[in-house]
Length: 247
Image (cartoon, rainbow, N blue to C red; front, top):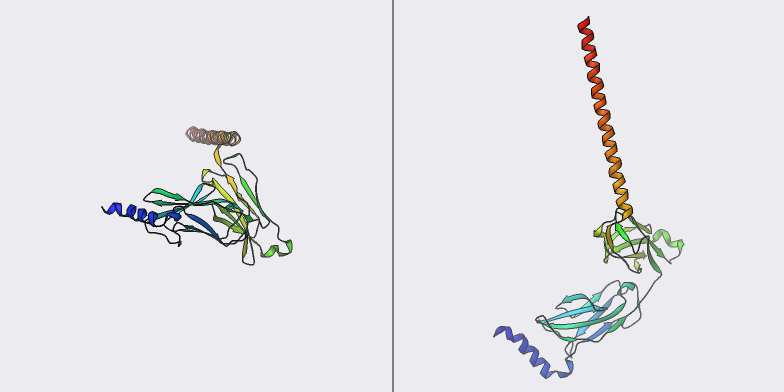
């Protein structure tokens, strides 16, 4: 009996509030967003905007789920151009979708920060990858600029230099990269670059093969030199012994 209570609550609400069957997604603030702004998306299923403990809210960016919780608000801090797209939400009751909202298009105005990568399409294990964060801020204030490099929205490096390098890349480096430039406490974010790391390239395979071959040759030479040295030492010792016997 208890497991039917949530469905009974849903039925009673649906009957008493027929106009609120579909969720409504709203955005705040309602203005042209610039990089660094904060954005709140509210998914209201009931007319008064309240939620229920049995409900689960899912938020989508371009049909990709970005948040799932019992909270009806999605907060995006320090928004950047990577957050551009169409947003919507869905309301679930005990794992079953009971409504999907309208779509809202979010457009973030770029602030003149661009991320460039030395490799984009074909990135293989063992390659070196270089990123450069370009800023439109004046060079006169360059000494006060801090560059942040992010992977999947998490900071992996920050410096006063605009370049970031990954040596001997591996599959754990797969992800979405972006950079941010901070000046006087305000950050500006760049575009996103998706890096997919594949298996070893032919070039790296040849390089590794040659390195192994050279190592084997060196080991053989060192081994030969060692045994030649041992043989010479033994012969010298035998000759010295024979000399003493003759005397």
